[in-house]
Length: 205
Image 1 (tube, rainbow, N blue to C red):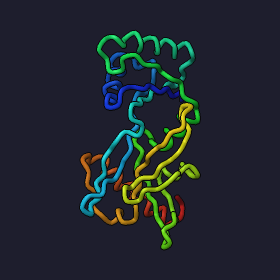
Image 2 (spheres, one colour):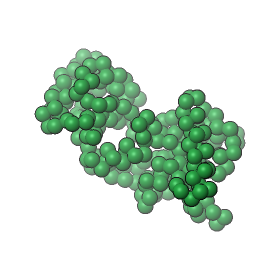
Image 3 (tube, rainbow, N blue to C red):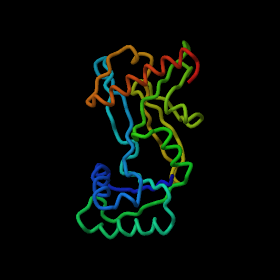
Image 4 (cartoon, rainbow, N blue to C red):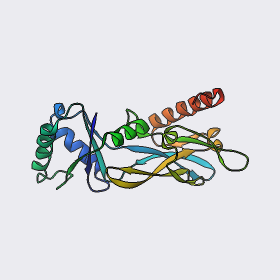
């Protein structure tokens, strides 16, 4: 799988995705999407889950067997349309390294959403267990912000050092009713939480 990065204005990512899906023949690429992540807000002792963009201003495009000629043809088509009132304006379509695409695919899955990771501390306040997408970032976590429910990951992507904020869930959140806007995401998160509990008890995660 080949990955390409398109940079656009922050807040216009979904519009760009819609434009590409409308204007570019589907046989020239496999998928075009924005990567989202789950985050927890703590308000009045309640855990509220919401979605936000993992990389603001970034849209991703994947191709199964896209050689250099196909890539150039696709890039030319996109730039040809830039003056037609589309979301991107003038932009460049940048090829990504295989390891970058593999990493993003592993943490975001088929639905392109980075789910909450479960982090557990021991009685001394040290990290005792990490489950979920964050486990794939071993050795790259710069710091945890437990009150705001996130971990800061430092990783090099598309040739640049990136500070990636990834949402976490703590033991205090597991027994609470999770509140959020999107019922589908809430259902998936609840199922993932149950899976973590089973694998945590079995020691298989």
